[in-house]
Every structure is written in C-alpha cells, then in structure tokens.
Image 1 (cartoon, rainbow, N blue to C red):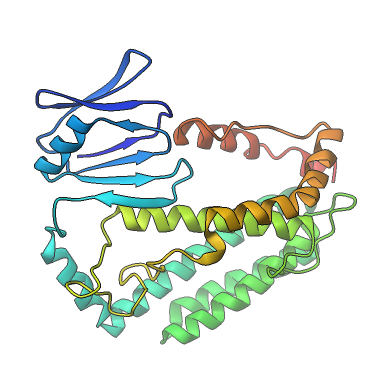
Image 2 (tube, rainbow, N blue to C red):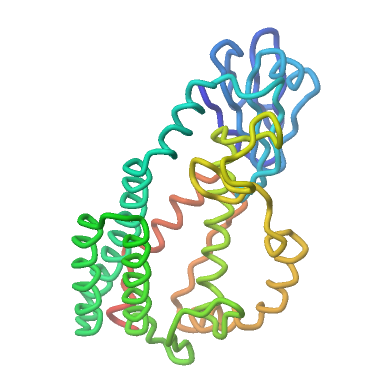
Length: 302
C-alpha cells in the first residue's frame, strides 16, 4: 500500500501497529503498518519520532516532498529491496528496441496532447492557421509510428513543437498579450514567462515523482548508467542551480510585473478565476479543471 499525506498541518503518529494521520484533534486516516510499502509526505506535515521509528523498522519507504511536489529526500533503512526490478530496468536500457519504444511512446503522447488542445480551441476560433498546424502535427504522429531510430523521433518531436507554438499565436488574441514565438532564456513577454513557469513546475513535479517511485542510486554501490541521469526516466539526479528556491524566488520577483499585466487584463475583463493552491492536490486539480473545461471566453471575448 502507498499513502499520500497532502493535508497541510496534519500530524503522522503511531498507535500500536497503526500509522494515524490527524489534524486539529480529528483523525483523518489510519493505516496498518503491515503492508505499508511507502508513505509520501507533502509540505507542512509533522512526523512524530515514534512514527519515524516504526516506519524505519517496518522498512516503509518514507518520502519527503514540498507542497508542490519537489523531491526533498527519503528516509530508508537500507538500499532498495527490489533488485529484480532494477535488473530488468538495466536490461531494457541496453535493448535498442525497448529504448525506441519508450521514445515513441513519450513523443506520441506529447504530440497527441498538443493536437487535442489545438483542435479544442479551434472549434470556436475556426482559424485556418491552427487547422493547418494541427494537420501537420497529425501527420507527424504517423511518421513517429514509422520512425526507426530515437534521433528520428527527436527530430519529429521538434518539428511538432514548432507547429504547436506557431498555432498558439492565433490562440492568444488578447490586447497587449501578443505571442510570436517560444523563447526561454530569458522569456521576452508575459506569455513566455507563464509558459516557462508552468514547465518548471511540471518538471519539478515529475522529477519528484520519479524520485518518490524509488529510482534511487548510490555513487559507488549502485551508480546510474550515465552519471547524474536517472536510468528509468532520464531526469537529472541532482537539482539544477536555477531551480534552487533562492534562484526561483529572485526570478519570480523580477518577472512579477509582467505576470501582473496578465492578471490585471483578465481581472478587468471579468474573466479571472482564482484557485487556492495551498489546499490538497486533488482539490486544487478539481478546481483547475472546473476553470478550464468550459473555456467560454475564447469564442466571445478574444
């Protein structure tokens, strides 16, 4: 069993053979230690010494993450027990056919999501440019299915991304929020700033989930196949300097003015919706989906 503790201000304690999660005197959940393989603790959650000892003695993998999902570390009584799984992962990485299949699956998913988004917005916009770029992305999906090497797939991924961002120019039509091309370092406009912020948050979350899934290594006893790179998902095993909290804080402070322009525009238009991101992940996700699913304003206001 895997348990996710996302309620901020909760306490994780031990009572006999149970792990009890509570907040403000109210019990939220209790779990038997027997069968508890992993517990993931997000953000401001207190872990009692008794619970910590019990989890270590039980061999439960205890993972600590920030509220947004950034991996902080793990408490483990020893190296990973699942050696069989690790051996299978190494064998697959040594197999060209397995590597090709993974590349194909990743890029296919990315292109399909891009295509779905463009088609959704174009139902209302009826843009010839969006339709052409969507058709090109659809054709690229067929090419990915026939590609024979990872490098060919990478090239098709880049071409699809270029088509996708080209179509975005027709989607962002609000006054003062022009979008011409994707640029990252530094992002030159509010749209690129928001895109970079979104990709950074998503990347941090995926990296945290990768770490939490048990893709751990040891410098000498269990090194990665390529130094500093996760053998399973390809993510970095060290935190990038530009992702450290103090660097991100400075970047956001510098870009705050541009972000406020976007917020002010949609607030003035009566289209701004606010979601409290400090709540449990499931609640935030549900509210975000409620905000974006109808998408009524692309047709009537832009």
